[in-house]
Image 1 (spheres, rainbow, N blue to C red):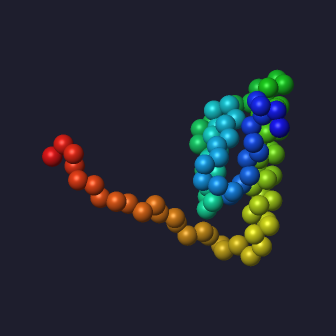
Image 2: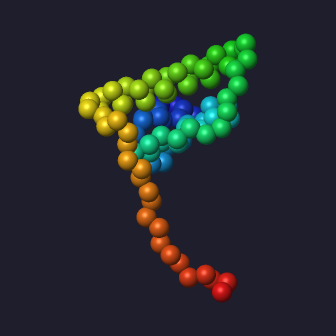
Length: 90
């Protein structure tokens, strides 16, 4: 892989990978993938390339979900553990 090439976005593979397309950010997670922001398309080559990259990423997400087999109707909410800390100012 060339030094400037980014590794592939593998859906649900880790909790760290991020893919950015214009103003749209896809945050990978082992339980969920989050999309944030917006993405505009104009009638130009750059927009076509962004649309193709988005299409490829969404197709990979769909394929990963289809490969799971018997999916539940709705995934349970995943809540991060919280820890109470003493107020350093009080």
